Amino acid sequence: MSIRKRSWESGGTTKTKWQVDYKDQNGKRCNKTFPTKTEATAWWTKTSGEVSQGTHTADSASITVSKAADLWIERAELEEREGSTVQQYRQHANLHIKPLMGTEKLSRLTQPRVESFRDDLLKTRSRALAKKVLTSLKGILKEAKRRGYVAQNVAADVSIKMQSRHDDKLRIGRDIPSKEEIKTLIEAAPADWKAFVLTAVFTGMRASELRGLAWDGVDFKGRTISVSQRADRFGKIGSVKSGAGYRDIPIPDEVAKPLMEWKLRCPKGDSNLVFPNGQGNVEFLSNIVKRFLSPIQVRCGMVRDPNAEEPAGKYGMHAFRHFYASWLIDQNFSAKRVQDRMGHSSITVTLDIYGHLFPDTDSDREKFDAAASALLA
Image (tube, rainbow, N blue to C red; front, side, top):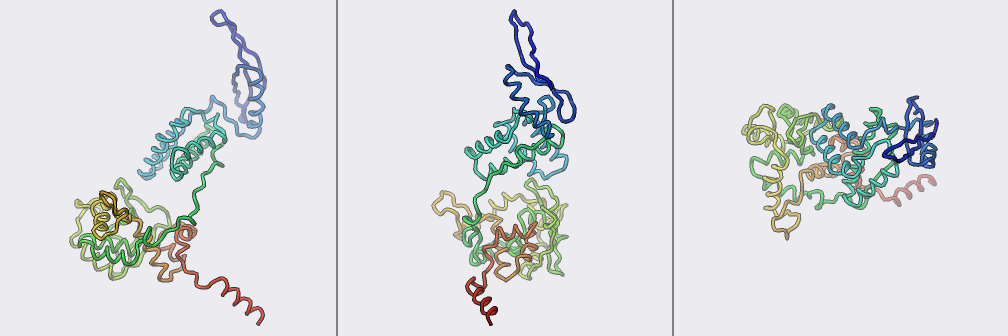
């Protein structure tokens, strides 16, 4: 490494720069110039540590955050991620990351700079959105590191903590329809929607799984529905969310019989879908909500805001999934069996969402009294 002075004539004026010549951790010759020797010396003092630790990236070998974001999205497309996922990546990059730090080079990013970026997000975006955007930035830097454009992911240790679920647990009548509300909706559902509602209520399938369900997955003889595919927001049929999503769900006669009747008049299409649109193709979730779910709730008096000019239904499609989980728990299903039926990737997910719904059959005092009696008997 050397720090040397460079001078040259320009327009009759002598100009001076201080240049640091060095080799990076890979032995590649690099240089960087500064207005003063003090700045050059200070920069090398910091950079020499990065070189020795193998975490340095020269400006000449780096790219901007904007370019790195484009490469990240390009890789997601090559890996054939779901269209909705790629669209979300693109929104995070174009609307949040590029405007705030797109022109900055990766080599100049530091953890304090990413911390500042996080703080800016929290000031101007919701906490949930800020967390997702920060996760996307981490993905961008991880991909850039994989490609060799940066030696470390300075965002790896930056985080946004969400508010505890303890303060916002799912509640019957607010987030989860009550049994009375479910019965009301089933009774009020038009004939062509009856099978759909019953299937949603008694299988807990995700909206995307219901929209992508094919008749091949319905076993009337065995009274089961096999979940093996789903439809994304663009109507494209693909695999389920995770390996745990592949599951067989038993259905009662109260679901099987209406499904048999519905099959006789169900619109036919190439995908052989159970709940298609009028042309036999994938139905969009927005249409299900606007044409059926919200209007039927309004007619039944189940509205989010009774004083609104145009009242909307109280529950979304995911509420049926919540109801199914609560119904399983009410039938004394174990947490493990609830996890399997719901298609959760881990039991931690199940307990995190629905743990407070499981009954505590014995109080702590009863347990302690029984244990003490057994010990002293």
